[in-house]
Image (cartoon, rainbow, N blue to C red):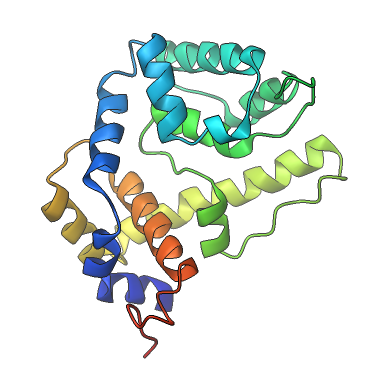
Length: 209
């Protein structure tokens, strides 16, 4: 509870670290998600930080095919998607890697009410990813368990108004109707963790009480 209280207390500081471009780029992707052409793919890769992973062309081909299929159906099976993309070589060397975060970003694009998993969310909830030496099925189940927790936790945050001050401040400042409550929560946590990691406590931008 303390972390949510801090986020409400320092909502304006958190929002100050979120750029308008982030809002605009997300809105564009959401509004254009049913037109997966070259421009959409480039902007998607940039916004969701796929480019730094140096993924293979085969991976991108499969990834966007799965996105297009998910949008057509209106749903995606996250566990099955994770397994499918694991069997697709992730880089030019032909390595197979578990790309769970990218899978959740795909699922969120299909259904914006779903949470997103990445390093910032992982660190906020003090989650430790499964050891890479474990069998693939064990690793996926561990990640799925955390994702199910994340889904339930976001519902709790919304139903109990645990971040109401911060969410209202976000929507008032950015005047966006494209962001679901879940995406606002994601953006707030991402920005909050970023501030903490950049030294917000030391600089006294955020103070423990």
